[in-house]
Each structure stands twice: as C-alpha cells, then as structure tokens.
Length: 419
Image 1: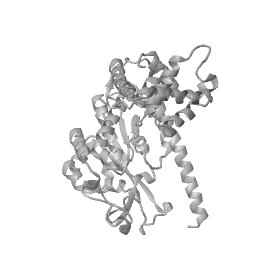
Image 2: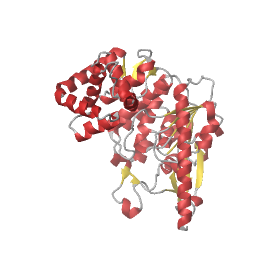
Image 3: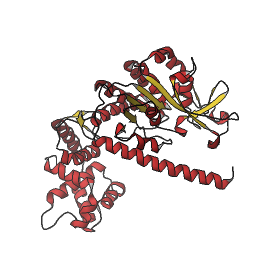
Image 4: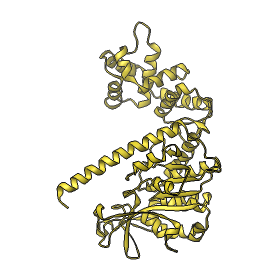
C-alpha cells in the first residue's frame, strides 16, 4: 500500500474514532441524567465492550443488575466483553466472580516468545473457562449469547481492507467451537497474535466494533444496557445513535488500570466500582466518583464534596452517609494538619497570592517547586478562604475565577466545619 494511502487511512480511522468516542460520551451523559430499570416484559440486551483486564468492571455491573432485578434476555460482547458475555449467558455469578478474583496475567497471556511469534498467545484461560463454564450449558441457556470478531482473508493479510467483520450468535457457531470464537474475539493484535480456527485466522472484534450495539438492535432489543471500558477500539457510532432512548451507557467513574495486567487487588477494586456505578446510574445511590446513601447529601454541593474526598484520597469503594463521609475527611485532615508546617506554608502561599497568580499556577508552584503535598496546599487554600473579607476578596475576581473546583471544595470544607 502506498505511504500516502496509509496516512490517509490512519487519519480517517482517527477521525472516525474521535467522532464515535464523542457519541459514546454523549450517550453516557444522557444515561446519568435519566436511566430507568427495564420492565420485566421489555426485551433487554446487555452489551459488553472490550478491555482485557478491565473486564472485571463488567462483572460488577452484572452483580448490580442482578440485585436490581433486571432480566437479561440476550448478552453480546467484543474481546473480554465476549468472554464475559459467554459467562453471563450461563448465569453463575459467584463462579465468575471467584474466577476473576483469582486470575493473574500469566494464566491468560504468554509473552515469552512474542517477538519471535509476532505477538503473545493465550495460556490456560481456555481450559479454565471450558472446565468451569461448559459450552453445552451456554447453548442451553435461555439467555442468548453473541460476539463480534474479525476474519482475515486466506493469506492472513493485516490490511484492514481485506478483513471481514463478523457478528455471531451462538447458533451461528459450530458445535464445540464457542470458546474458540470467544478467544478469537479476544485476540487483540499485536498484544496477541491472530487466533486460528480450522485454518482461518481471526482478530479482536474491537478492530471493527468495540461495543457491538448493532447485535442487540438486530435481535430486536427494546432496552439496551451497554458497558464502555474505555479501552482501545473502533465504535460504530451510528449504531449508538440509532439505539437512542433505548440505550443506557455505563462508564467507569475512575481509572480502571492497565488493560493487560490481571492483578487480583485491582480486579476487586474495579469490580466494586462497576457495581456501585451501576447502582448509581439507576438511582439506588447518589454520587459520581463516590457513593452516598440516597438523599443523604445536598445535591447542589455534591461536586465540591466529592472534590474534597478526591484530594484527600478517600476510599471510593465505600458507601457513605453524610456523617461517615465527614468523619472520614476529618480523620484525613487531622493527619495532614499534624504533619504540616503551617507557618512556612502561610508565608509561601502569601507570596504567591501577592503576585496575583492563578490558583493553578500557585498550586503547581507549591506542589512541584516546594515541599508540600496536594492535601496541605488545599488546606492552605481553605485557610485563605476563612481569612478573606469583603474588602479583600480571594485573589481578586479574575484570579478567583481560575481557582475552579478546588475553590468550591474549599468553600464546602469551610462551610461544613472540616477546617
């Protein structure tokens, strides 16, 4: 392929990816504003995106949907979403949870000969899945199961123009081959080399459709719940738009971590995140990054309260009441105060304020040039807020506007007697 053609294709791909990403973000924002639990009589689909190790988040979503009483009539996915869809179709959450919590990178990937072989390969994951989640039980399940993968041509060319995207439901896949096609969908080249089935090579479905909403649409789903793990992949944005009000998009409230590394500690964390994010989407709890008992926090100041928690590193896996959140912050603030040289911070902060710098510049200066932590610098801002008067507002109006989220958090902390 001529060099200029490769560049044009790359630009086209990046442009499509950016546009599709914006469509997904828009769908996720709408879901946060209004998401109703599907009625029992509505044909409901669960669509799971790719993301390798991040797939533990989808197990948390499944747990929440189960507790909310959502009946899943069909489930489909791409890459790790295909593997999770296979498991969801079988219906054994506890077994799936235990498998995920014990999974380590070396049990999934073998990278020892990746350079010589043109990519890594799967290790024992196929045997584990076939032993714990038998194909015949998935085929017998009332929950339909499907996946997306990409078939290479006979020469195994890596030219995308020669690829054939495939949307396959379990009835489309030959007996005894379900797990092979799941692993084909998971073959994210060049991390993993193309997966071969009966002489034909296949790639990760994310090379064509990272969140295969089209499968649910084609099956006549009346409600679609999709999970976006925010990994690399191409999204068919037109399908997201076509789903419209039928679609609820669930996205993580925090970073999910490295998509190649399977680490039990991170698995537990993001599984919990998936559970809490889903419960919040459907109104069981309040909050964005943090989770609060329904109605326990003032919605107008919630963003400032969460910003304060983020600054002091509160545990996002806890379900807080207003009082327990306040107590957790007080403990962190007291610990920070005890280790803080208040006199030096006051002097350094005053010098920077007098230069009429923006809060962003002041924060960078204190945290990166000085010897202060993010928490101690924030406490300095809180002290400045307490000292300000009507005659001498905080760093004048122009600078105050640049303070943004930290300023609002400081006002909230002062107002609630935390500092």
